Image 1 (cartoon, rainbow, N blue to C red):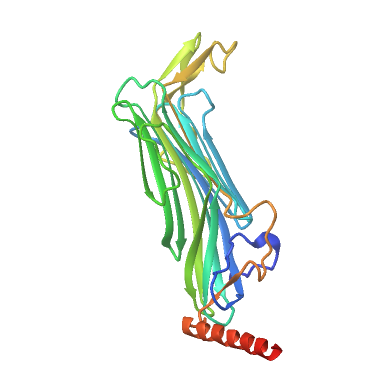
Image 2: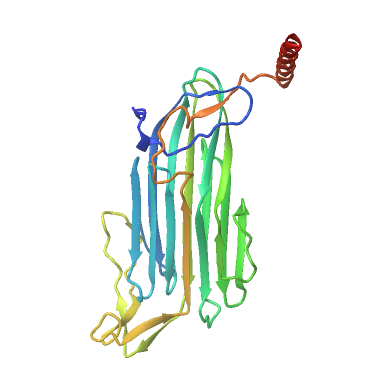
Length: 339
């Protein structure tokens, strides 16, 4: 049985902001089953890819860091995802080399229960603080080479999408750089650019009416991903070597192939004696998405000031107008008495 959060600063990860309007009242609610899940994974190769993924989860801090090979080896990818109880989230992925893909996902979820005794309309405020995508063509020489980078962000209530934003940036020899997006646009894209970034974005979502005793599940997911195929040349005195497929690790590797891949300039090259050789790649990819979720490093206490809402039983506009006329009448009467 899930236990309710204690009233403690570090237990809050979702801000339920006040709904502006008439008859604003303190709203009592409980945050239940809060959790952060992070995941990162890659696929290396074309016909029978090497695939691997790593997953972590925690109600306070979750992080996943995953790399394939080192910088300078062919191919090399990297990714990370993290989140904490303050609501901060971050996701990134990058890579270069022959036939690779890498993704990173962070998802935070919390159950909000209305225990105020009356129906409440709840709002959710969030903020995106930075992000960028790069899909570079550094000298493609054939139609099979490409670079792509993208992100997908989704905010859901009871598994129904309430807010969504996605963008994919791809560069190729034949089509150049092309960017396509869906959902909420975070910034304008200049056609032909191999780099795309966005500034701060602030959003406020109406989660809808929650009757007394009912609950809803709010989840927020950020995914970054990259993919590409880049030719590599060995410069200097290095000699290309081959890399064997990695062994399975704790049952998390999936479909590991037995074939080998070109790895790096070794011998008298990269990683070898003298380091006189190195790899040059025809492309590069990177994606990053940071989201503070409207929080800072200072904990925000779980109290009445954070969780307020407009009760469903608000005064009708006509009643408010009559109340205003009544107050005006009282003021006029007092003024007349003074005279």
